Length: 314
Image 1 (cartoon, rainbow, N blue to C red):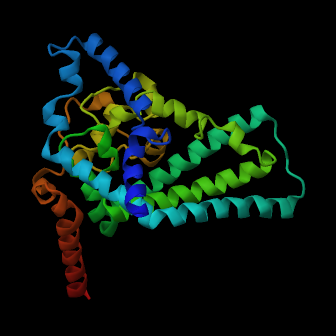
Image 2: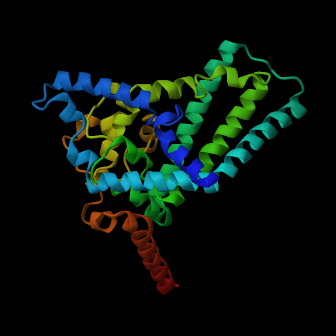
Image 3: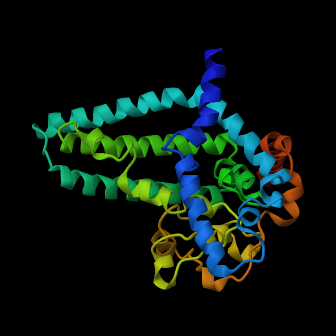
């Protein structure tokens, strides 16, 4: 019963926990940005119909999103709660060993901690995301799991959590490791006061990112950024290009917040280069159009084919 209760709480946390991208206040702030975007573009449809089209929110693809979100919420309770505890333990060990090696804490000022910690945790987490995301695209074994995310034929904010459990577990373990390493270091540097220098429990830059339309990245709202800014920050439309079913857009715009990782590694595509985007995997979409196909049937079938091909080559 405790597991069921915790699982249900985890499901609702996607709306009620400020650490989640789909926290209700971040959804509202994204809606306000859409309202301005809708007025500027002068759409024929009303704002409400533009924001909540049935073909997006009530599609088969969207219901696969919702089902995977619920499944992964329960799996987090069952499998990842222990990793979170280990993450806190690892952060403590980082702090402890730094104190053993260097003696008294460095004791940066409050302003220095806010700036340095916010910048470091944001860059470290985003580069880790880019790296693991790149691996999921380039390593065939991992791509078979990441395909589930790219099989969405329409995008809504909850598509963010359209992940195969294997990918979800890997992403969370990497995120916990990076968070623990950086937080443990700055806990030492702030004389164990790091918790006072976050905004509602999250970094200042993460708070700004989530407040300023992060949910539009998985949406039908093709909002791009002006000029050079798209070489620094990934705009919503740039991430939608990443979901394109056009082969020339595959493996492009793989950054989370920042575009300069893609600029450095040659995977950047800017909004002005793409007029229209269709989402999904093309002909393969039929293999992922239900919850069962996305979760079990297609990944296992494709991995089986890969193993057979490997055996034949051997």
